[in-house]
Length: 139
Ligand code: HEM
Image 1: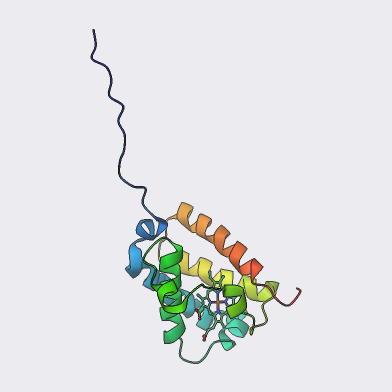
Image 2: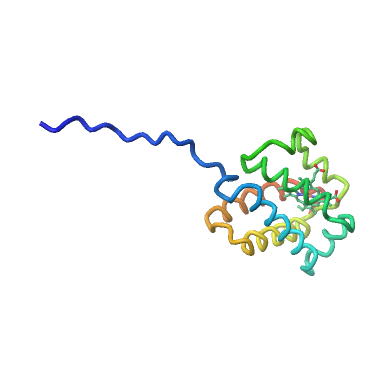
């Protein structure tokens, strides 16, 4: 008689998106590429103009936000509290054109940094939902 089969249980915790993407160094590369895209794409000129000349401070904040959002360390909320992104963006007129410009920069940044296609598509869907919810101009 055959011995009973012991079910193989994978006890490793599922990797977070943060780990799958390559942790903080990868997020830094994506954010650098994202703002480089914003600096150069004609359709992003208006959203670039909403930012100050020096992008270093907002880059650092976006890195911390994305690390946390992807399941990594919670440095963003320790430093800045609840993201309240709609409230924090209320001063900037965001309609469909601004949303799409933001998403185009992010899509190009994910492509440029070689993010896995399946992960990229999933993140883009999630970014679409967040960016669409941020619209505040009625268009
Ligand atoms: C939809 C179009 C968007 C526009 C036009 C926009 C524009 C801006 C601007 C002008 C700032 C302030 C930069 C500064 O302080 O100099 C900002 C901050 C920020 N944005 Fe956006 N944004 C957009 C979408 C998004 C999305 C989809 C996310 C997240 C996935 C996001 C995350 C952030 C974060 C985390 C900050 C810093 C917030 C803080 O101060 O704690 N933004 N954004």
